Length: 159
Image 1 (tube, rainbow, N blue to C red):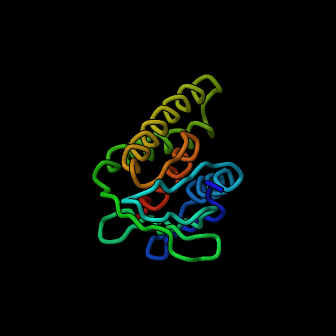
Image 2: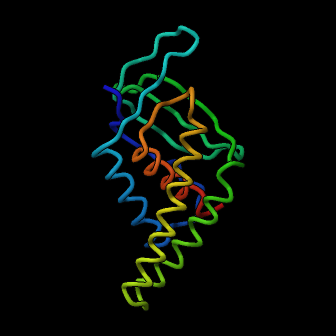
């Protein structure tokens, strides 16, 4: 089965999240487990363990680390991605999220909708960057990439 059955964020060294960041995290994790597509491609003719997979996400030594295990916890793959391609889009995403969180409290629906459209556009860009960075390492659909990008943003919130 080509999917994620469990996701875990290593956020132990981050400051406590704001209520908004915690909500983003909870929604992304719930939606990801409910519906996702995640497969490990054949690499160098090595056997690839079948899913579903347990995925651990962490930032270590300024790199994004994916620790992929089988449902039984056996190692399946691990890859490290440079954070550089994500920096600007994560920064833009949190800036527009901040505007959105403020707008929800004070602005009329039309203005909220405009900010939300911009937020979705930046979110889509982040998902696109992630899918490109995962090429050859993991195969994900657009919705899975979006949810994983949200979780990457959550890991960035303290850094």
